[in-house]
Length: 263
Image 1 (spheres, rainbow, N blue to C red):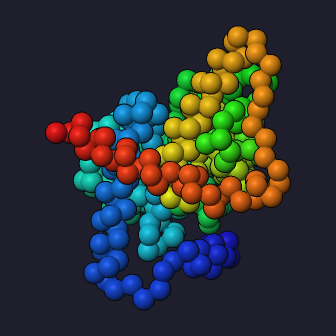
Image 2 (cartoon, helix red, strand yellow):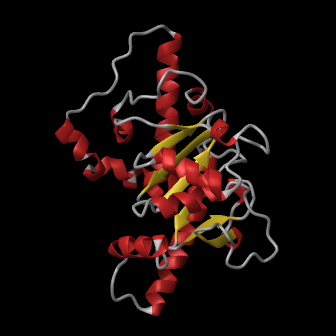
C-alpha cells in the first residue's frame, strides 16, 4: 500500500507524452549529469575518495541511479547502476556496491519531492555533528536551511556492527525519519546527507553547506558574536522559488571547469 501511495504522489513529477526515444535520451542525460555531479563534488573536496551522490530515475520514480563502489572522481557512465528503492541492483554485473546505498533508497521512499541525494564527510560539517552548537546559515546562499538541520544519531541503533554507517534499511529509514522535510541532516560522528529537487541543487547545497560550516567555525573560533542570517516568514516561504537557490548558473560553470580539467 505504501508503494502505491508513493507512486501516486510521484506522478505529478513526471512529464506526459514522452516517446521511447525521448525517454532513452532523458536517461542518458541524467546519467551524464550524475557522472558530472560525482566529478564536481570530488573537485570541490566534498567527495574526496569517499561518499556518494544519486539521482532518481527520470521515468521510474521507484528506481534510482548510483555509481558502483568507486572513488567519485573516477566515476564514468559505465559505473552507474540502477537500483530499486530497497537498494537492490537491477543488474549487478558483478560490481561491488556502496555499503550505505540504503541512505538513498530510504530517502527516495520517504520523500517524493527529492530527486537527488548526496552523502559526504566534509570536515567542517562533521564538526557540527559532534557537539551542541547548531549549524546555522551565515550568508544568503545558505538560506535553504533557515529552518534548521536535524541530527541523526546512530546510537539509537546501538554501537556495534559499524554503528555510524547506514549499512541496512532500518538505519536508512531512521535517517529518513530524522531528515523529515529538511534539506539536510547531520549524522552523528559521521557526516551529512543533503537532498534536493535536482542534481544541480543538491550539488550546490552540498558545497554551500561546507562553506557555511567553515565560515561559522572561523567566527566561533575567534569568539565573535555572530549575526546569523534572518529572513521573514514570507521570504522564507519563497526560498525554493528564488533563482540562485537552484544553482543552475554555478552548475554550468562547474561542468565547464571539470571539462577543462579533463583536457
